Image 1: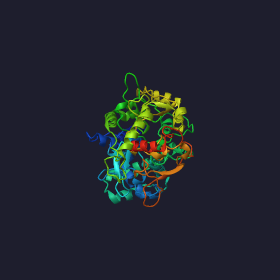
Image 2: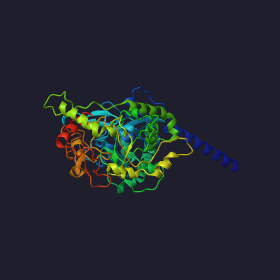
Image 3: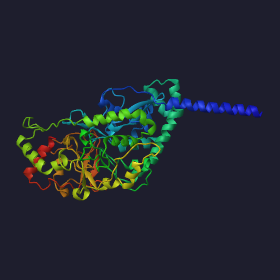
Length: 491
């Protein structure tokens, strides 16, 4: 009897081991992906190695808006409700990748989820995609909350999910079994865990479209730091023409709003880590990350539509004499910080001098810097360029016409408003639209209503939303302001 017992036990252990290997093969084995030399395609849809940690099985992801439209934001339009640009013929919107692990395609966010722009010059024209642009319409917090709400919904069952998938895809038997008995329960559990991980968001002001708190999740989840109740809400920067941040013999240029990094590749790698890449997936992802870095080094903004060459009466016509006069004002008052040859270009300007809302600055702490510098000691990431600064970085103004609202937290709706004293700037406005404001520079602010694109009321009285500071240009004479505004629109 004892011999029979041990034989059965051995057989069961063999089955467990074989089953574990089979499950890994079916669900987690990395599969070589099609390669492309199109750097824009790599940026918009390439994997950053986070599919195992953040990926949702494709067919579950595909049917969630149909199953749970009540959890979508206002003016629900499938995944378009989150402001993502979806090109005709693409499998997923810009900012999402589909990578096969085992036999299952998984959908996960990449860099372009936040760094994608769009604009319209007229209300009746379709939006135009701007690669690597500022995410003026995208709403990552709404996407996160949608997934959390879905995971907590008792209607998220295998029967409902499989029935909805069956409406659009005749799934093979093996794949159907994996989805029903493994992937649906695992996805539900993962989304519920995501709800616990992001519970800290409940006591902070909403991000809203075009904004994100990018580093508090890293602090709490990756770096295992305690919730310090800081607010990191800030606009999603464009990733344009970053070749000029390469270190020289005399200067190191700062990245992120507060300059917490000075190395472009470390910025790309740490960003992927923050979105779920692990050291296990890094080896197969490194080449793609370097392609992403090459793209954002070279990709520039589209040319401004504002031009003296447009006919008089055209809403995007600017007077040539005003542009020339504004260029001289810019050279005298702005170039030292915002021109690539300026002495303060891409350096942090002290918060005392700048005077803008300091919440985003205070969110990144010396403890976070020190912890990231030794992140995962068992794996040599080699981070050496994290830092803590005392202000916000004077960035390039390339593509300024597409970067509204303005300041690091997007608290000033237009360029015209930025040239006003803080007390005269709008205290509340709607943001999240991509219709260019031809008169004021930036984007049109209009209330969210049926038939309009998704937007959100921005209240500058909330913590992290302050619109004070950056007084340069506010004391100019009215005529000089108009001239400077004419020039800034052309950038």
